[in-house]
Image (cartoon, rainbow, N blue to C red):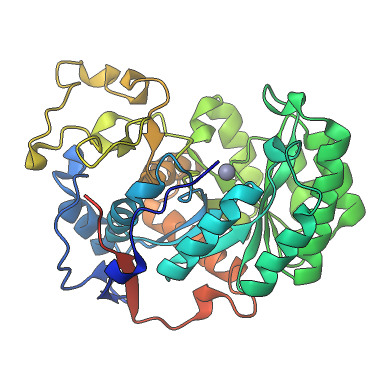
Length: 374
Ligand SMILES: [Zn+2]
């Protein structure tokens, strides 16, 4: 698979970010065609989030995904302006590790993560592990991920013995590197617990991304060093079940993520950002009625109650700024103030990703964003 690289490095521009107030200053870049009707526009949205002092850390996403890679400059800018200050960008296959590395070089706000996802285990090359080690040698500030186990619809087509072997090898690598590792687990929590118990503990942390496991497993997993990261997928399980599980997660182990471009939250369209499945943009980057850019809201005639993500065409892509919707939902289940959960999850993520040499530890006074390719 050939992946696009649509902008030359020469087009990189810099503009300062006031890290204390979490806002981008003196931006000379034009308004991206992304907005949020509820907040009228992205600036207002950003002002409200930043005004509340909310900083967010997207603990797991895939901004290198070929479906959205060409929109990354706009996507990242909008998310930054909304208060999302860091993005743990997870590679999933040998092919996209290079993309993750390129993004790492272009954005201070990106924490690169390299790993082989269970869906891509069958197509790994004989040299995959050496190649992975090389990425950590040349990018020593990287974390590990996404790795994991999957017995779901797609995962059961991949030999499970191979999945376990590849998972084990990468867990060992994460331990040796003393890096956090982002783990995907679908219908394999029994196997996961057994493997983590035999290979653990993991003092550098294991991120159970988009956690949908049982409440009962939470204490066992937490004992081994697990962090529980929640995405829009949490909205796919019964709220009572989600609430029971959430209440057992130790406060210092809660993380939030977008998992963009997947896991579009089932929120009301008025508070969502979304990207058309074909990733064409920027006109295709709609929001719940971006009147400012003249885009007509195609859902304006829907009654308010039906104006949620299910009205969008199947395959509509998620935007990392939707981590705000995840925050709202998780805070409501935990009966917490959004601001408190934002602070807790941000602090947890910063602590987790503040290993030796991490980009999160660098005292950056400016961020670097490639010029939009609109
Ligand atoms: Zn993922």
